[in-house]
Image (cartoon, rainbow, N blue to C red; front, side):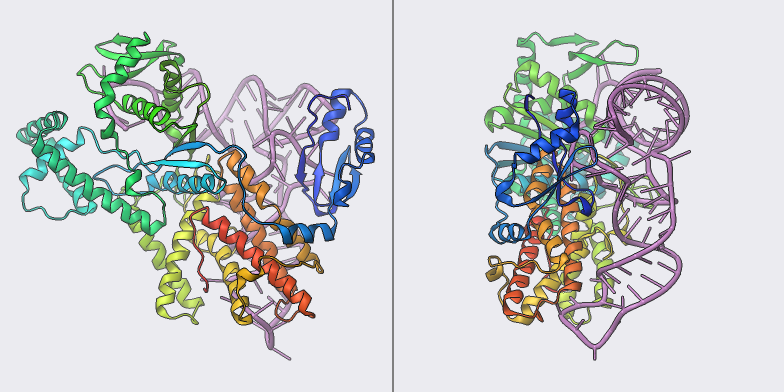
Length: 553
RNA sequence: GCGCUCGUAGCUCAACUGGAUAGAGCAUCGGCCUUCUAAGCCGAGGGUUGAAGGUUCGAGUCCUUCCGAGCGUGCCA
């Protein structure tokens, strides 16, 4: 048409009356050529680009090309479709997420990084990428001096759960502030720790181990795929920190300012316009998180040979990562062909839009959060699912609660803050995990009644008779494009919205089209196939979000 | 002060990155269980997308200004 790289700009229609898809490219082309967009659209339609699809093409509005797919085409395509999806070029992707602190229980502040990160790694793996999970736990710092000093004075201390250790830390901090001798001891332990004193190191390892076991327990309750072997703590980079400073020095990037070793990067300024430094070594010789993060970055691009390095932290660290990546490029830790991404997310707020805390102003622990969720879910399950045994009710409540917590987080645009509201997330109305789980349970129930194996109906001829069957089929076919969009922007909420839409259309189909009482055996099989396909989309979709599905509820 | 993120129905969130009449759920009101799970489905009302300009055939989305919110801004992470 005389235009470089014309784009078809095909999207699902906003309104059913415009068909199934709309191509908006004609208007863009017309703009470039200075011609009438409807004429361009007509020329495109005349060339019959979609002849083999046998689709109906119309021109609407200023030059939209509306596409209505042929029912037979839709049915055949769906019956032949599988959900397997591979990217053309598989990459090695390092994903840094969750990152709890040792000697501190996992709390709401870790929720989003953990849940969103875990969904993304599953999605990356699903489409064929190699993912290297990195749990960058905070296992180092001056806080450990207090902890170890206190640990040594309280020999009877035996509560080695993370909760016990955290209490110990609180007591140690108090002692540190009030007892001069103890403060001295604590500072001494920090020095001993840095010098690798065997006794101190043993205590430290003890604490780290106990903490990590607890963290893993919460992961397992939340169905998070991080393993102990994915842990690579800050301390593991200690030995190479001097070499990082050296690398910076060798590149001529290091400047000493007020006794601290700094890197100044163009474009980073303070309020008065003076350059803002990244401090890599304090005036007392100690290193900072910038230094550790640089070391981790080097490790990831060099040792782990990453094509992509992804970080999930809240949006408050935007500045830090922007600087980290800038310095990483200057010092050569980020080769040209490697991409680094800081995926940000907003804070978790309570119903009233304030930071989500306990009444006492403490962080809400994930352990407590899960317990409360299960309790609330159990109340609902008991009142609604009397047909289940009490053991089954327990199991369902757990799946519903964990699913609800994760889905509530994942279904919102991660860049914004979101409000944590039990009543909304546990409700069966609306875009929630229980709603999707319920639809899936209904499908399972159909196959149980029919005494048939769902998986045997994944393939089979589909007949689209009722409008709600057609609408469902159309949605089921959009799995691939949704997944692509989802990974393109690393935003799981696109997938959630899609799964919700599929479920809504399934529910309509369910109301309008009796499956087991279908008029003909042929129609029965077709509807069983639609059910099976729906269940598969829900199962695989939610599996990739880290959410499980009860067979009955 | 500067930087970042944001402002959409009474509330919680969408809107495929510039496309057609801005969509869901909650809440409100009204219907549907002798038929596969009513934890469901169907319908109604509800909007000057914070404000004003600008670019465009076309703006919630892009540019400018203003108003408002949250976060960040040198030895914590």
